[in-house]
Image (cartoon, rainbow, N blue to C red):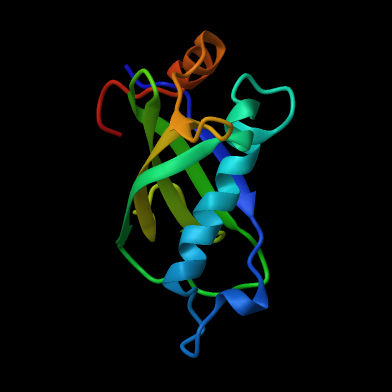
Length: 143
């Protein structure tokens, strides 16, 4: 059964492009990072404490097409594919603003994020509230 999908837009900046006018790889990773903020770190969310202590343990980025620099934002869809005691894996689809949902995303990605206690400099378990919120986005089958 598919879980919810969180969708947001992230603005492109002139500095995101390279000489070929497409978005540079390092900037793609930054756009993915920025897309997580309203999904996981906004005040009031059950996962807001992750904004004060979380580390990325793994990331994979797959390019299916170019993300061209344009005046509008890119669209990013996110969901959870694995949920463990202290970490979770999220998947992403990043599209140019004018790419229809029926077309393949230009970029797909998976990243693993671990809850982290900055005071002790050690991983920590996800709280019940964090787990319950993330479980809403858990996909139990391929999308």
